[in-house]
Length: 144
Image (cartoon, rainbow, N blue to C red):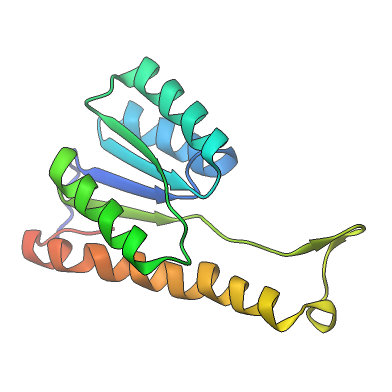
């Protein structure tokens, strides 16, 4: 793929807090348009407001998306393409780690349901995000 520097549309999973949100601000300061998503409604609302206030609503988008729901992922990427353009940058930052009263659980302490959630979010969700952006990246000859 080319070394084109943009500006581009960037999508950040887990982009409404911490490293993901800091990445969104950095990409927006560099001139890119940015869409972030997360599972938590409160963090999505707060991040959306902060990004729109700092960079304008036409350059950013924040939505609640559950990576365990393939149709929600597909709908989100359709909305991004329609409102911001085809993504040229994908940052897969979302991930879960089940916790107990004393912190992260060891694999031996996970229920099968918790393990399946980890795989659905951390592995399958990441693959579905990559699959959503790859055709546009190939078509444009650019992708990161």
